[in-house]
Image (cartoon, rainbow, N blue to C red; front, side, top):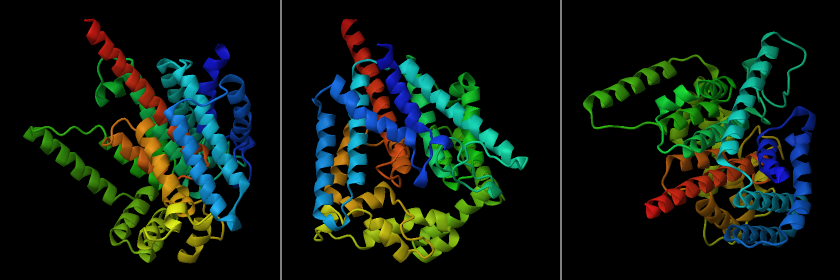
Length: 407
């Protein structure tokens, strides 16, 4: 019983972090790899079979991905498909542990809080090492020490921003579930001062420009516009001051965001690459996808094959080394595997991860996941956490409904 209670928490911890001692080439996390290899043994020893709609959706998704890969045998790679299969099996196991009641919302919330604080602590240690020019930087994997761009407990800074944001958002959601009424952002800050401080500090000082964008969008989640002229004026004044401060700020991540935002309006790949080559890697492939999109092209339905995007991007983006770009979920997965498996996994997201179709948290989900490779721990950590959030929220709604019926 205790083992089953520990497993879901261990899965979340392993998926949300990477330690340098377990980091291999291309940021492979050997600890995650070990978890994936053990999972099928756990599945067949405890569960034996699949029996839920979500499982069938994921199996259908894998079969569609498999058919897409087989259709392009010239680029077929068994390791890519094996990773996808093992992550799906891991999710099915996790889902069954959750449905069997081996993870309480209290332990879930506490674990997410600890993850956020752990990122903060490791980041501060790394900043200390860089500031004092120590020969060794604790848990450093990827980043740029010249501008304090540090990875904390993630594989690299922009991924760390997503890990921290999703973990903190889910912490707030899960901590609210135990309360009868949702608390305001002011009350939340009062109750969780240190966790809020750790979260905001980490997002601002890790050196990732994308983390600043994510933080801004996250804070907009708490904006409540009232009809009161006084409140509207206060919001307008606050936004004006913030825009003024940010516009004239000399903080490096802010400067990069400003210059890239100006280029983004034009949707010109050359201007985007000139403004911020690193950030443009996220946008230019999307522009290329829509520029060449055609429903009459069979490859847009079944994909162009493994690593098509990895090989395509260097041809449209000078300065990107051949084979260096993983591609992400969109548009790389759409390019490589096609619309059919993409539509299936999107249906899975809608049914099992997203609470409402139109919700601010869905925007955070999309921004966090769209450029992340499907065979990465970050992608599946986001899926696991959003699934868990929805499970506990639905459970709370069902309990409230049953209580009303009794009364």
